[in-house]
Image (cartoon, rainbow, N blue to C red; front, side):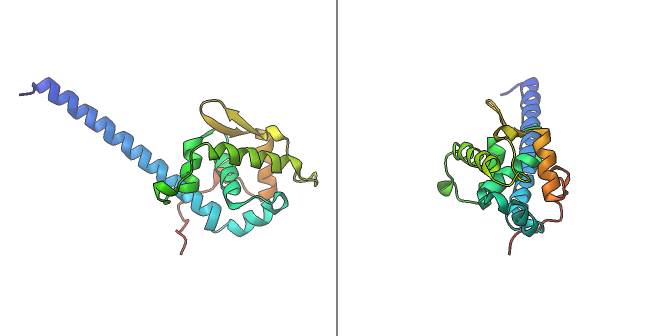
Length: 162
């Protein structure tokens, strides 16, 4: 029979795990709303018009939007969740695909001929072992192009796609 102190320790551990699960669930839900906004949300038409000069695909747009949404840093796991939440696990690619998308976004942002939309290739910074963040100047320029700051958006009113 377990001692009372062992039971109390286990109960404390269970509460800590439940708290972590709750935090992870909230994070997952936030990234689902971000994905919905990036793909089908109320501002998707505005976003596609703004991003059309670069000819970003929906996945690339989702990556850029997720990075802009967290200008101080976003993990590859968070971007993966934003892009593939709801997809069956068997249909999800390896996480390295995020690195490929980021590389393509960097290239497209830098190689556009129109100076109004061109950004340095290092606008998206790699946080080694952690993920990515956007340079403050790049964030400001993209915010000006979009007409709003994605990191300041409230996503509570986003409805799932029909």
